[in-house]
Amino acid sequence: MNHHQLEKDLEHLEQIISRLSVQDRIPLSYWRNRVKSVSGAALVPSQMTRIKRLDEALRALEARQKSDV
Image 1: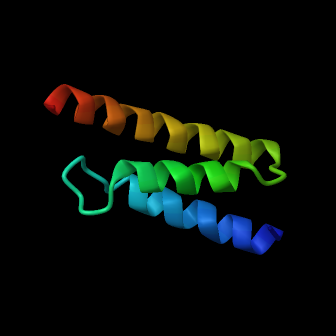
Image 2 (image 1 turned 180 degrees about the horizontal axis):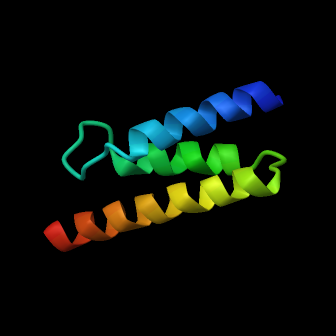
């Protein structure tokens, strides 16, 4: 994945995940897989930090989802 595409993907994920709720139509597993696919690329430290934040936000949503069940 080239640098520009990686940046676009990270920006998109940051925008979407910050607005997600457990009631969204697209399941959290879809976004989890998107984050995994981006995290598999060669990342610079600032991108790794951004991936960590995305992962933490998803974990919080997943925990909320489990407690709602």
